[in-house]
Each structure stands twice: as C-alpha cells, then as structure tokens.
Amino acid sequence: MTAAAPEPTGQTTTVLIVDDHDLIRKGLRHAFDRDPQFEVVGEADTAAEALRQATSLMPSVVIMDLRLPDGSGLEATRKLRKTHPSMGIVVLTMYAGDDQLFGALDAGASAFVPKSAPSSDVVSAARHASSNPTAFSAADLAEAMQRRLTPSGPQLSPRESQVLKLLADGLSVAGIAKQLYVSESTAKTHISKLYEKLGAGNRAQALMTALKLGLLEAPDQPKF
Picture (cartoon, one colour):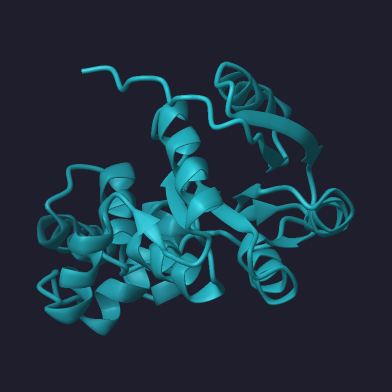
C-alpha cells in the first residue's frame, strides 16, 4: 500500500545530504525533490564539510552517512547534537547491525536507516527527525533491544572468533592457516564449524550474519 503524500504545512523542511558517493547523494536529492515538504539546501562528502555546512545553512535535517573519508559520521553526529540540539539527524549506513544502530542512538541521532532500505524510508525518517529530533527511530529498534537484553546468538570459541576476524579481513584458507600456525585442513575445520554456528553457507553469509548479531564490528572507520 502506497503511503499518501503529506498535506502541505506551509513550512519547508530543509535538508543537508552527507555522503561521499555522488550517486547516493543524487538519488536522495531526487527523492526529497519529489516531496513538496522538503528542500535540499546542501550536499557534503566529508565530515568536516558536513559540520561546516550544517553550521552555516542550519538545515532542519541532516542525512548523515556513517563512513566518510575524513572521519566517522557518528562522531560528526555527536558534535552536531551537542552544538545544534534541535537539528534532526538521520544516520544512513551500509552496515546496519546492532552495533551501528546503538552507536547512532548513543551519538544522539534522530533516526537510523540502512542503505538497503528504499529512499522513501529515508524521507519518512527525515520527516520524523524534523518534528522529533531527540526521539530515536529505527525499523529494527525493538528487535535490537530484545537481542541486547536477551542475547541468544551463537557462542563462538576464541579460535572461531579469530577465524571470523580473519575471514572479514579477506584472508584465504591458506592465509588463515598461516596466521594461526595450523594446517590448511585444520583451518578448513574451524571455518566449517564457524559457518555451522552462524547458519551460513559461505563467507559472505557468515560475515553478514556476524554483523547482524554484533559478533563483528562493521568497517565504519575513516578511509585513508
């Protein structure tokens, strides 16, 4: 069912889009341009530029990517919340695990949206952020809270945790065996047991599941 378009309120909600990918910024701008409530007043591709434009333009809402070339979007969010308490901030990330969600909550974001969500979800989050900047919203918030209160994920051994980290680093079976000083056969056994615990059939599924369960930290770090 398609949501009805919001009724005009006579007040424009201004938006600053922060993302280091030009294609994503253009896509989000197009989504906001289709909604008469919003006006995109600026774009930024770094944390420093985001902070500068947010201060000079004073938008109603900032759409903040977590991973930026010169720093973390979470740190930029934290600074904005401290200096502009009434500004709406929507955190947008490719890695939508529990750690990222709670990181956004702790930083003072108004909403959390994965990049896999449709652009209409970002617009809806911006609408929420403009009217309730300090009330956190996320589609998976209730489930994430439940997982944090009653953790029921797979329990990995120290060795399996090591293997998971090496898989995330992109190492091959031979590379993992070398790092752990074991045979390739033993490394394969560790990987097989890890996949079984995570209910995964391959490396990509294992890493995505581990991210979702908070067993692995997403690479939302500055890119150099």
